[in-house]
Amino acid sequence: MSLTILAAVLSACSIFQKPSTASFQAMDTVMSLTVYGGEADICRDLQSRINRLDSLLDATDENSEIYRLNNEKTAVLSEDTARILRASLDLCGELDGSFDITVYPAVKTWGFTTGDYRVPNENELSQLASRVDHTAVAQDGDTFSLPEGAMIDLGAAAKGYAADVCTDILKDSSADGAVLNLGGTICLYGQKSGGRFQVGIADPENPAGYFGTLSCGACVISTSGGYERFFELDGRRYIHILDPKTAAPVGNEILSVTVCVRPDTDSLPGTRADALSTALFVMGIDEATDYYLQHKDFDFVILTKDGRLYLTGGIYDDFSLSDGYTFTLYKI
Ligand code: AMP
Ligand code: MG
Image: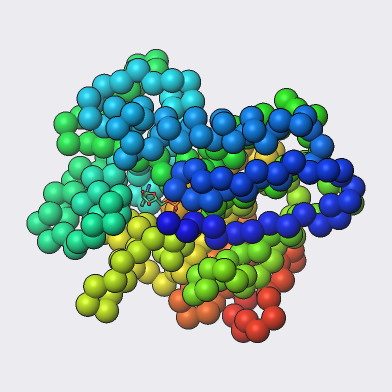
């Protein structure tokens, strides 16, 4: 699956010397790391930490901790798995109704885990929706339990959490700056003295191209789009982002949501950016706008199917539309 939806280029690279780089497959996507300054083996450290997270969190991997929890219903989790699970449960509470990690039985039934796609009937859908309930996940220290019938999937926040873990590693290193493209989630690290990071936002109709560019400082940027994984049947497109209330793929006016969270606003900014991009997609433009106006501790770029582009005030002036695109811009 190709999930590389954003690419980042570092402007004024010359202020740093000899970047270390790595490119590899993890979390179902291609990742590429560029670190300026820092120890010679910094990219190897980051890569092995991401691979370790992948093997803990992948709900489809029989050896992962999440698979064990889903199948045995009680599991003692390692520090990383417990940390992302706690953070995800908090986000489920905050984003109640639009983000729910217990939507996994529905994700499986629609075939998004295997590619064996099918459309469940109404009866199945209401059964699946009744199994969605993040409040039923119980925790006692690092021991977590699920009720019969419940299963979780951290796929909507895992790359964001990986960005947070990588940021911790970078902080402990002598690195000056970094661009970590984790496939849909970009971690921009470091103080820039000579320039800002330029991040292209993928065109959902042609994900190899960019409809626009954001100029930003250190932050985590996460994009969710139906184009990342979907199937089509009888002229209808079914995307991998589900509405937890109906257990069905979201079919609203949105094509893609990009969220930017700055490091000083949250202890796990990447996890929040990743969860928010999924959740705002489910909310739709009106509810997403209301949510933003209530919080204002993040920014978004939302593209609709009819070419409207909504940008929040914190990034409106940092965005430039690529040549050839005629979207109508709205400032929120
Ligand atoms: P993302 O690409 O970050 O938007 O995450 C989408 C993935 O998260 C899907 O492939 C599902 O595995 C899972 N997912 C889908 N819908 C939701 C939802 N509403 N809340 C939480 N996880 C979801
Ligand atoms: Mg997400």
